[in-house]
Image 1 (cartoon, rainbow, N blue to C red):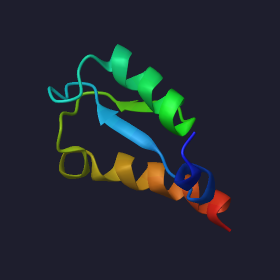
Image 2: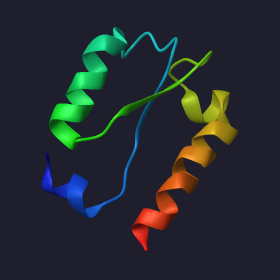
Image 3: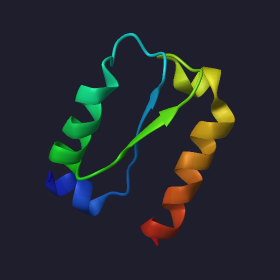
Length: 69
């Protein structure tokens, strides 16, 4: 795990239809191996996750707030 991942709350999220990060089967293990994090997949979205699903992105970020205090 990277040192920055220990110090900074973070999440790895990807759209289920993101053509740049496919296959998801490779991205998930890489996020775990490098950052110690589970991959969050937002169904029905592509590469522009914040524009396509702002509410879901906000919810993922909001879930990090308790861990940052």
